[in-house]
Image 1: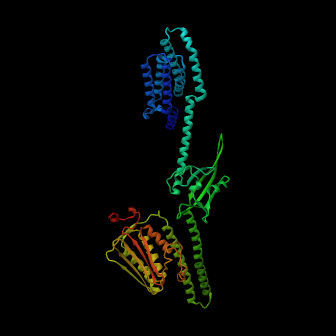
Image 2: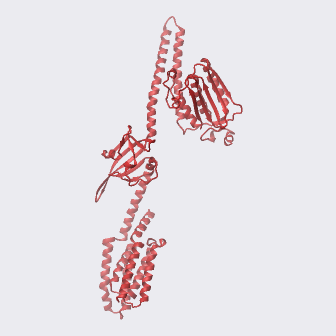
Image 3: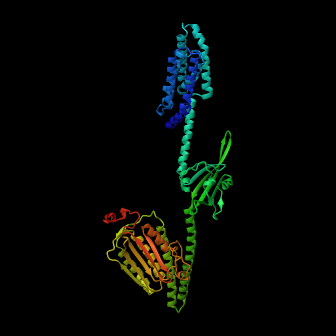
Length: 560
């Protein structure tokens, strides 16, 4: 805190006494002295003494221009020097009892301003001694009558100095108190600005006309600019619209607020292509001052685009899941009820019971698949979740998947083959995520194929990446729908697609998991002729490798 007070003192000193004030004042005093000499009003008749005195005084005043010799850093030296210079002028050059003594009022004030009563006492004592010595030097012999003649001058100047010090400019204590208050106000302001700048939300304060007074760094980030927006009208800076793209005035909205208003149905148009959803909080501010009150508004603006997207996805999730759950639960309930009813009959029909239980089992498996998809979805959407990294052969994963899906394909009379290029390098990534990606791709190939074949290939291409392709001869995907297949909960409206159960999560999950292991999925398809999904990944296929999860010598394999 003391550092800030000293800074305020320095600022005040530099304001009161600087080169632009001192040099003209000293120059005028020297001109008066020169004019007095030319008109015969000075004590000395030596032009050399007057010229040297004037030159020394002017040159000394020019020292205020030098930054290292600021008055605020050397005020004790300057005050002492000016007292000695002025005393010399009073004694040797100017008449003792003349209007030059009036200038001593400034010296006495400065002495009292910086050194309080002690400084004032020394300044007045110096003035008295200068007058006495000057009288003795200029008007000998020095007698009691000489002393009596100077007392009225001294007393008058002392009274004027005291009045000016007390009534106009105050004491050093008053100055220190003011400096402390200024420093405290500056400290509070800096602390408030630091707090505002630490906020993630954009904070902007405007006057009643919308002119921006205060803003934080988050406001510039929201606007994607580095320009200074102070003094500009907030309506010119923030292009606000509603959900229907109708332009809105942020100040018109603010003036409808009695105290505090919050709106979350507005959008900020950054440019013709970028539009973000915002939450706008508005509060009225009123500053009471002696010259009246100043009204304004404080805005807190938060980017809620991601939150809105999450809310929309939650709504979609509830709608899709509730719809998808309703059918299997109803079918399972009906099938089990039918099996119970048939079992109670004396002539049990085992075939009908078996069919009912099989339907129930099928629907329960669908529910299990959905729950598994939701669990995987949660894991795929959390980029901060750690992965277990392993180094392994791609052929191992493809062999395990063949054991799982080949029997399912055989039930539908679909040929299932796996071809792995010889000499494929090992991959270092999440084996779990890679397996889940391929499971979703192969599962879709089986689900949407009624005949033909499914071919899984793994090759190393010239781009030094491994390409794993899942090719089927199923119903295919239209060109218009190929851009949507990786969207969450999306399912084609094609009648052939709707024949099969599904949540619309499989390919979305696959794409998110692929992003987590730094891989991409490419799709090529034609309606009625089948689809080809290709996973492209590097041998080291993770964005961030946690070496603590890599066992034994796999760290060395990673680094190489």
